[in-house]
Amino acid sequence: MIAGVCGGIGARLGIDATIVRIAFVALALAWVGVPLYLLGWILLPPGAEAQRAAAAPSARTTTRRAAGMALIVLGAVLMVRHSGVALPDAVIWPALCVALGLGIVVWKAQPGTSIGRAAAARIAAGTLLLALGIGVTAAANLSLSAVLDGLLSGGLVVGGLALILGPWMAVLLRDRREERLQRIRADERAEMAAHLHDSVLQTLALMQRADDPARMAALARRQERELRGWLYGGGPEPNQATVRAAVEHLAGVVEDRHGVVIDVVAVGDAPLGPDMESLVAAAGEAMTNAARWSGCSTVSVFVESAPEGVEVFVRDRGAGFDPAAVDGDSRGIRDSIRGRLDRVGGSCDISSSKGHGTEVRLHLARS
Image (cartoon, rainbow, N blue to C red; front, side, top):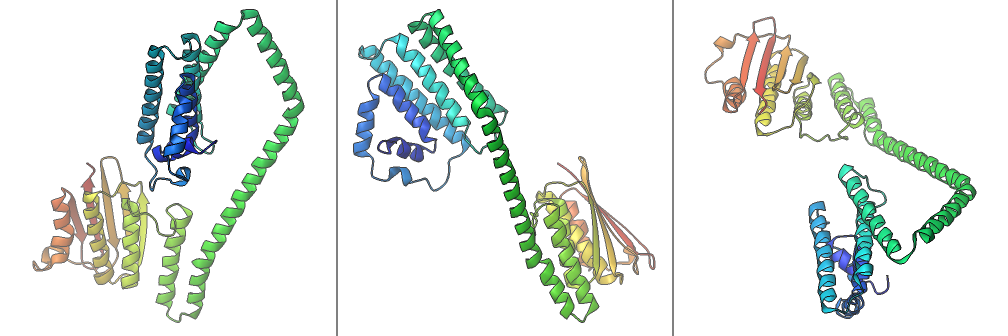
């Protein structure tokens, strides 16, 4: 705040500058803080506070750096104390407790950040250290009656300020909360309007100019998938890191390529690991076969994810076929479905008969 030294050091280490300033104040109690600050003012390049790191350090790295700075301060204080030029122990140790507690509270109680259990525990520990340092300092320099009189006077002043400023602060906080909620609603409405303009309205305009009913149906189905993904999580292009999202994505691809309707119903979900990618690829091949050869306009896909495994059912009410009569040179079922699942320990059951449709059951245990 004076020359930007603490801000530059905090930016370089990736920690809050207030912690660095508290450390310099603690070092000043040992008569080394001021010379170090002047030395940093001389040696640090101009604009060091604005030179931020390209990538923010992780929380673990920040914790280690803050702990390292605390050890540096403690070591410097001990070294100067043993040299005999520091303040007496009755002053310096309570002051260090106050500095350490204040640093922990400031570090963990950053505005605009959520406080978890671990951070709350650290804040409580820092507050206890802060109170301990202040209490020891007061006990060493003041009498008990003076401390009680000061607490009583301070309590009366705080109570009076609360009675005077309390209603005004309550109204101010309520107005600020309502303004924040209104801003959030306005942002949500603007985002929804922009998405509907970019997706739904554009699709409706294309459907008005389309003469082919199949093309219109394909456009409507694609827009329905995008809108469902946007409304129920994942955005207009959902993250395909789960089995459900990957199967729905493949169903959309098969719909666009073959002009059939793929109805996907999913219960539960599972992460998309390498083994599950094989299951999804086999399901995609089963959907493609049903779209190409069944002669049915609708294919039903059911995905069930349980803790013990994932099952995918691909059903159609089309022409059907005899699985035993499939040519051995046909690689669709042998390699793309059964082969994929065999390599990852899965299973495939195909039930079909001519004129009664086909059901493909794919199963893979979760590791």
